[in-house]
Image (cartoon, rainbow, N blue to C red):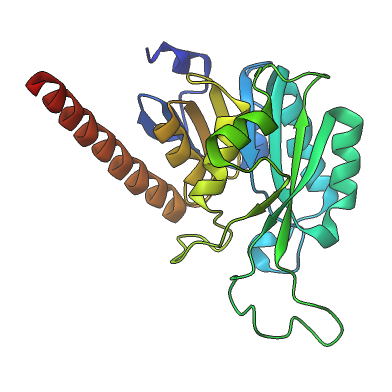
Length: 253
């Protein structure tokens, strides 16, 4: 059923598939037009407030999109947000005030680019990112016991994710598909609507397609929208091919 899309903005759509919508837009502008209480899960990786051009934002800007996220999340919706350890504290403060913080988890990735080089004259090289996990309200609407679910499916239910960085990268801030799939699988159910307001190269969308979740992504740059389009087209072709193979094997039996 594709009529769920009727509740969302029709212009600025760069890509539509059965389970998803990709918007090309400024993130705050687009979020303002998403209906209240419409999102089941947010998984995102915003700019880290660093001095790098594509990462160069500040806390005031972060609070603008976070306020919109709070408005559009359903009661009990879950929220995962990556951030830089050195710049995390005001973001953490906002989350503690406006949501219920459940974990300050860690993605440990020692194989990052130039990991063997010095980070600076007076600092150690950082090889981990923060993952804030929070809920709107006190209890997640997804009734899974996260640690038990993770242990049963992956034999590991801890708050430190030791998953190598993927190569080659389609986006400088791209996160591993394996990691994103775990977050989505643990905190949503099939058919739920997942939002990534900084979708970049589309890893969240790919994960949702594989896991049977609906998704909305927002990206400002057309070159990355095109990458998302190509990835989603490839994923759906693979899913269709495997479905035909399964049905063929079933008929033989």
